[in-house]
Length: 346
Image (tube, rainbow, N blue to C red):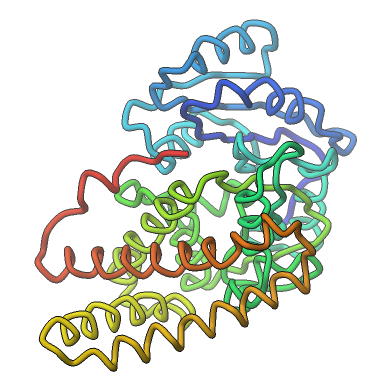
């Protein structure tokens, strides 16, 4: 799709309880270095924040006419994105996240990639880094997240990859993409971006990843947060598969198969047949050691952080696997999504 040499870019932003980050985020977003002839509007859909975020956003909007704050009563990402999209006016729409930091030319590089490739959506790699004052768990989480071994070879984690992909982190679209492929699926609490990209690709469109589109994602800082995040990712995967009648990639199926085997072998152990469970746990312990070694080769860590890498990897696998099984079970029993997985938490 062709992009004109100039116009309005609409940045759409879902947000809930981010009081500690909204000031820095808005400063960075409004300071983006745009190509000549381009301007930016920032639409933030606040999901009933109760930590002072809403009040601070209103102050920021009063101080800068480029900022608009919208009320997102359903509190989830997909409804916030659609609310902001409906109120936006730009020929180009870029999704931003409050908990991500952006290069000063992030939006400019998105525009460049759209112009050069004619893609229906463009984005950069998913680059995780710990906070400057991070503890060992967050440092371990960032290192494990970035490892291609832990990610199953996902190209979205490759910082140097340029090319056609199935999905990208966040995204930037010509408005015509939404007119052609629709908006975000509001029945999905997680994975709405992957589902939208899948809709684009299956509809004959194209998605491009550019290594020049640079941002930094700050991972969760506590093990429980990591596990809950991946439990939700896994839970919503079967709903995407059902919608498109398309199986997930092998790397997305493996955690669920592993957790399912754990349950079966644990039941066998409860009636006196313990060796299958012991063999499975032993094999997984070896796999954790191999994956941990791969992570540490790519990201040297302090001993305290290195010791937490296997815990983070296990939280990824077990959380995603358990979520996949629970989501699949709810689909099989024709139950709607469980309420506890319908609310995002940091």
